[in-house]
Length: 170
Image (cartoon, rainbow, N blue to C red):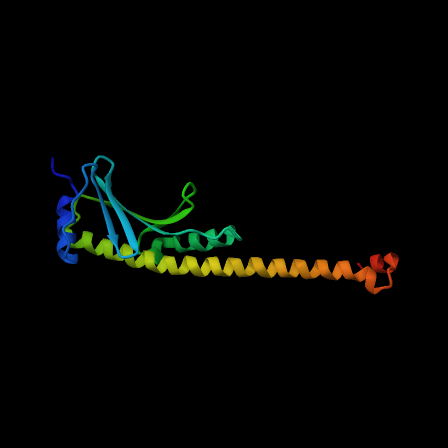
């Protein structure tokens, strides 16, 4: 039985100079440098799903990072029509695109793969920046908290041990 993705795999293979074969399960797995992509038909072969991993969000201030990532989905403008997602079991941000298989042509398929790779590279950079900003904010908050604790601990000693004077200042 011919896989619905095989003609697309062949068109993409010609473009990138590789022989590509669709697996018996109907999936095409690409590994292009540092970027991997899963392409698979779903909905009884009516649609094709493109999926690639972007990276892992930091454990610091995740709400900030997820908020920044979600804003990238607004109108799909910053994701080239794809959607950012999060796999909580793997702790991985992904980029997904679902297209109808009917009417899709080989060149459009290859261009979609290119666009997904470009979008994933952009979002890897963005995620790294979001992670760095979140970690910096976390470290700043920790430093401020530690500084406040040091001041509080030193205050009674600085006033000659007069706790009443210290408490009035607080």
